[in-house]
Amino acid sequence: MTLWFVRGLRRGVVTTRYPARPDESAALLPSPPAFRPRALTEDTARRLVQACPGGALQLARNAALLFDVGRCTACGRCAAAAPDAVTRSGAWELAASTRSVLIKEIPLRGEAR
Amino acid sequence: MTTELTATGAPRVVPGAVTTFQVASPDLEAVVRDLHGLRLADMFAGGSGGSSPRAGGAATDGDAPTLRLVWANDAGEGQSGYVITETQIDGTEYPALSDVAPAAFVEECEIYEQFGIRPATGKPLNRVMLPPHTDLPTLGRKPAREPDEVRAPHAVAGEAFEFPFGPVRQAGVESLYYGLVTSGEEIVDVYLFTWHKHRGLEWRLAGKTPEQALFLAERAEGLSAVAVGWALAAAVESATGTTPPEAAQRTRAVALELERLYNHAAAMAALCQSTGLSVGQSAAEIALERLLRLNARALGHRYLFGVVAPGGACRAPDSGAIRGELPGAYGEFRRAADALLATNSFVDRLEATGTLTSAQAAALGMVGPVARATGLAGDARLVPGGPYDPDAGGPGAGIRVATATAGDALARFTVMLAEAAESVRLIGQFLDAGPFFDARTAAGIAELRQTAGGTGLGWAESPRGEALAWVALDGDGRISRARLRPASARNWRGFDDACRSGNVFTDVPIIEASFWLTAAGMAR
Image (cartoon, rainbow over all chains, first blue to last red; front, side, top):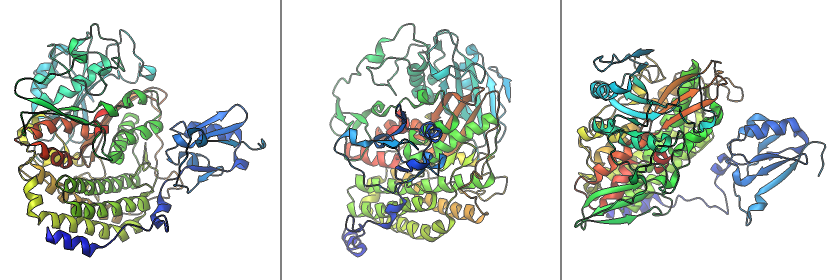
């Protein structure tokens, strides 16, 4: 046991300085998509809805795309299906106090809201 | 290849191939006796083939399900192929196969929950996937009469009592209920309830395209995402006659070995936790974290989700990142392992704990490190036809399958350590074998061939052992029935035998860590 004590001391602290300084590996974490409404046509939106395996994307009746962050697994299939309209947001510190805040309405092109 | 198999016709196993035999229902029991030299790898019902799918897996009356038994040929050196027997079940009962092959029992229970057909002897069945309050069955027709025992609580009598533990246990551990039957300290029996994690995945897979199905298959057992995903992708490729590009096969193999490395590091951390060695646990977790970060850097996801695709691979490994970081991360792993093996108090706790004999492991159809620690040398990577093909002379040829003989927790741990070393060697060989592909294009994916429907079996050696998947595709290329069999679904049935081998309460966490299974893979 003494040996393990010495080993532990010798190894020192390996935890990162988060949140003061996030570790650079944070950039590698999967993140939910960010949408470019200008490139988001209705046709593209339909493709995105089809590509989303978690059902996080739905077409709203009023020509908008509903994005439920709570159902998003950050799998990246939407960004692969329409790279012009969708990118990785890079956001991984996600929190909300109510469920409804997680549902975003993204206007489609030409339908400013 | 499909032929008729009767009770007297001994099967001829073609290496590297999946051989399918039709067996008449009255002959089934005798055929199972004849096939006893092979390992029963899986048993499931449903999926009449490509011609008449049940859309959405909906229950239909009068549709006779097909009972399929998958046998692996492990005999001698390595593993040379699979045999599938297909039997039409016209009534509500079939021969009680677990009386002949004990490895079939859990599947008999599952098939009852999914299709409402049961072994003919009226033997009691356990609830495996579905909680007792849910309705049966999920995929097939209603049983004519529901037997009493499916909703009856089990009873513990005499001097023994049941010590309930779970389903909520320590932080961050899967939901799993242990009923530890004891007369004081020694474990007499163990009841496992895994259904808290049941997600009805096989039911959900019906009607999906292979791409959609792969998303769910990766999540059947997240810690084996590559292996289960690969098994499903291989099953779809076999059903459609598609061959993935060579570089995509190597990509899958690199991901599979990275998955094995991080799982074995996590198992080592769990073993330290179960033996109260917190500094050792931290040392193993440092190695684990470095391996997970390497996964993210090399293949875009810490748990390697989204690498495998039907027809190939979506991402190519970053060879530079792996070459740069793997030696350091593995060095961390090895230092922790060496220090643990030199710690008597750790080794003593593992030695003679949770012992399985090779006869028990063979009878129960154990796979992976649990089987190999008893001396059985089966390994799905050795089946010809993949990137590990032993005869093709490729980069994965010449795998050294690690085995031990003691069958205890220490043997499982040493097998895992030897496998980790082998994984590092294999990753180097796969990287050296040639360039990968540009992942921004679809160069790593071969388009699935259009067929009129068909069936296929796929396999991959996960960190816990052989993962199997079987699919039936309809004419649109959608799945009409998919069967997922992660290694956990096999190995949990050896867990209670291991617990009963003269162990006390405090040995259970050690045995669980040394098996390194998931409840999700069992309950799926």
